Length: 279
Image 1 (cartoon, helix red, strand yellow):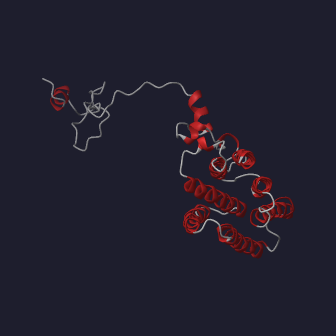
Image 2 (tube, one colour):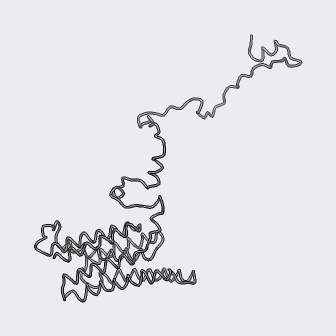
Image 3 (tube, rainbow, N blue to C red):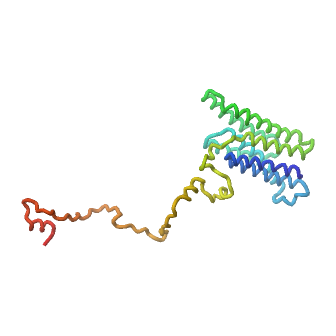
């Protein structure tokens, strides 16, 4: 089906927005969802079946799994958890959603389970913050500009997905993709506080994904430094230590003290020569 395949590309702007805001993990999940959803819908029709590089049931599984996982990571990002709670809760969702969708891919629980669990965890955290601060947490603008509109578009997407697809699958499912991507963009916070700021801000690129680049601040410092001479030390050579820099624990001989320029009173010259070993 061409229209659902093309409408799956709306997750690409969502991935771009997430990467710009510093949510690189969420951006990769959105891209994962877009890729497998587009290939899955392309395999539904006869014209684009050449793109089916995997079995149809596997594409179906990863399409549903990516959608549910995108909902989970978006809501966890909205909760603004500290580490290690954030990574622990995220990994808990990754594992449990994979098992749940493997058991049943079409029930209401594939989406209601992750959404209900995430909302419950967020409510517990926000209520604790409100009790500590004795004020509304987070700010009211978060509820009016992010939570409210994002939940509305998310509810619209689920209604289109489960109740109105029988009208016209191609158009209704395409609007489902659009509503879901808009809800992700609205619910995602404006900035990831773990991504850094200024020169230390983390950036997503092909080199970063391949672990081939350093942070921006480190690379700028390397450019200003003068090139240092490479050390000739290898695993086959033993570093030589200079004798005068080596710390020695054994007692050394006393240093030679020259004789005084003027003879000491009461001591003859011959006596001084004998004391210093002169003949």
